[in-house]
Image 1 (spheres, helix red, strand yellow):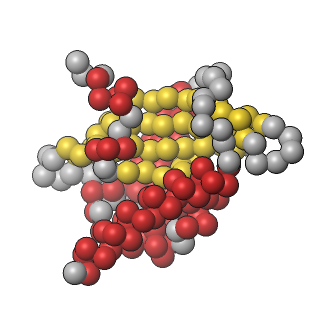
Image 2 (cartoon, one colour):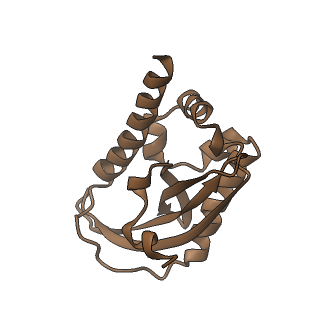
Length: 166
């Protein structure tokens, strides 16, 4: 029962983080265009986050998350979540073979501005060799990529990433 409650909490954190980001940013539903921001910077930020997790530098990883993430997940909740999904801190390897950078308009204030969003996706392999999907959503603020949320759920893998190996 305790494990089911913690898994439910973890699912709520992921959903709440995504909802908080889209609510507080108040973006339009359509993508305005693609940005010149390098996808290598996006992958580098995702790698730094995963390496911090893998090296058990949880505070460092937490500091890489966005304001929206921190509004719904304290450091204590973050650590509890990672405790329920040990693959995130004790993986044998991971790959990020899909990335996308896009821009959208921020309509939350009187001045319209552009927000840069990114997503990386691939697989994470546990110590027994089992592959699991890995998806990381990011936002670029002040030329720094920040983690909005991350997921091990197959339904969070971008559709385009499903066809990379075909």
